[in-house]
Amino acid sequence: ATSADYAPFEFHKMVNGKDTIMGFDISLAQEIADQLGKELVIKDMDFGNVLTELQNGNADMAIAALSANEERKKQVDFSDVYFKAEICCIIRKEDSAKYPSLESFNGVSVAAQTGSVQETVVKEQMTGAKLVSLAKMPEEIMQLTAGKVDAVVSETAVAAGYIASNPDLMIASFKVPYDSEGSSVAVQKGNTELAKQINEVIAKLKESGKMGELIDKANEEAVDAK
Figure 1 (cartoon, one colour):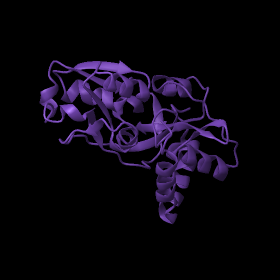
Figure 2 (cartoon, rainbow, N blue to C red):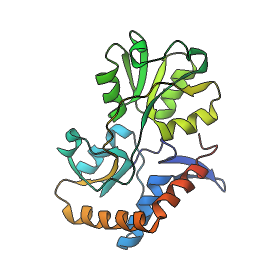
Figure 3 (cartoon, rainbow, N blue to C red):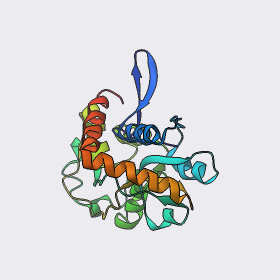
Figure 4 (cartoon, rainbow, N blue to C red):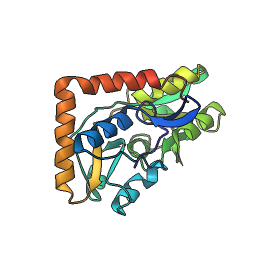
């Protein structure tokens, strides 16, 4: 289970005339499937449904740049961390002087993906802002460029790709304090055997240096994917 709107982790791109889901998480999922001798079947859905689909037994694992926070750990089990992320605010370039800090968003609208840690960041660190929860990252960017929201809270790696495609946008100059749990693969609660197998694959990829190669490849593939 994934939500393919979050380049370079997972996204759609036309390849030889075919709509293809690719990205860092998808490559990792393929490595896991290959090393377990399984066929990878990708189920694309809204981010807010990913863990529900897993809990309902409609998926064996969920890979969607998921942070293993305490609330999610009550619902599902997680693998070891395979990627550590940073959080930022995407704003319009014309507003660079207007928004120099988290506090400067008091009273204005800030978008974040429904069910994400970015949504929690807005609620807990931008308490004066008006949270606009949206299902898909492209929707957030469209709302920002149209002037319907004043910022989008996003992972920095994801923000870079959208900014490359939208030259009127930028990453705000201030840092967003965020103690990242890192991205992990989710499995059904109690499926310790699968979690152990996934951890073995993650360890091998890190030790061999291939994990870094998968990240670099995804960044290259994500160009013009929006």
